[in-house]
Amino acid sequence: MSWQQRIDSALAARRATRTLRRRQVVEQGAGRWLTAQDKRYLNFSSNDYLGLSQHPQVVAAWQQGAARFGVGSGGSGHVSGYSCAHQQLEEDLAQWLGYPRALLFISGFAANQAVITALAAKDDRIVADRLSHASLLEAASLSPAQLRRFAHNDPAQLQTLLAKPVGGQQLVVTEGIFSMDGDSAPLAEIDRVTRAAGAWLLVDDAHGIGVSGSGGRGSCHAQQVQPDLLIITFGKGFGVSGAAVLCSEPVAEYLVQFARHLIYSTSMPPAQAAALQASLDVIRGDEGQQRRDKLQQHIALFRRGAAALTMAMTDSVSAIQPLIVGDNARALWMAETLREHGCWVTAIRPPTVPEGTARLRLTLTAAHETDDITRLLEVLDAAS
Image 1 (cartoon, rainbow, N blue to C red):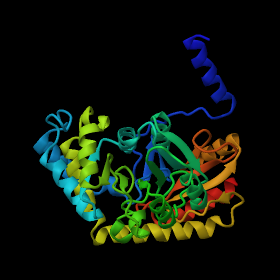
Image 2: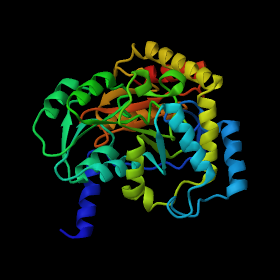
Image 3: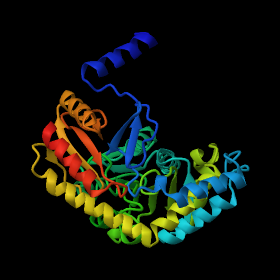
Image 4: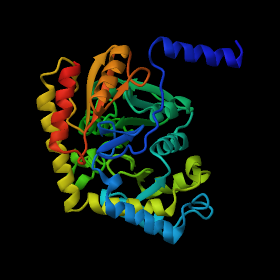
């Protein structure tokens, strides 16, 4: 089969199963409203959980940072791209989350890949929750280590897998809040099982940081767990983009030496680090708590109303509220129907989620108003 035949065959298979992905051009897509093709929709597909992407303080910090530093970093942090703005943000993140060090990365995908690629060796074993993010599972599967998956949120099976003989070290991988189901990992029990086996724990808390825990410190803080490696990303609760790895001093120095994503990528613009600093200030202040409280009110209102719908719900009490439709074509039809009624919702289908679990992935934010949630429930009831 030629290159072109292989490509054509793969695309044809996606079309036949109604799983072909298409990008949508939008004029504005991060806040309460999404604008596309001159039409405005209530936005229920944004991960901007606290509404900080539009926050005047965050926007002004980026603008002021651009005026001071320019719009790019000019190189890798190992060459000339590590500015005082980067250093200050790393130090503040480490202090806030109770770690000796924090290292900034250009994205959560890059951070996950960098850590696993740098750590995993031939005789090691990575034991990951089967619903872990693609960046984690891909890095683990491409590493020289053995990859084993435990049943979703099942510490008992994790314990069984960790008990099997292994020549090297073991790394347990999970998320704080899972991106497609919106449910939380039993981190305290996972941590206990991991420690008992002498393994290390890596938690990707992309969807918990800024939103969960005291002061928005995330899922691990909420369950009084300090993993060996904590990955946080800034495209959700922080409303910007990028990521950081929180770890010990020796691990940080090791990553500085061996994490290729860190060494060979241009660092994030200093202006972006300045915007993240402003976002962090909001998150850990009184306004951040007010926004978290408002988000929780929206979640409670939605779950009360959605209980009457015919679609299955997950156990999520996070900003991610999936409604399981099952059939790919029906999920696409429902998403389009909701858009026709002014609500922008995305249908998620395999291979992003398991076969037979196509869903409407709804996200609620602090930028929404109570009437927005009520309107969404009305439209969902009519469409279902």
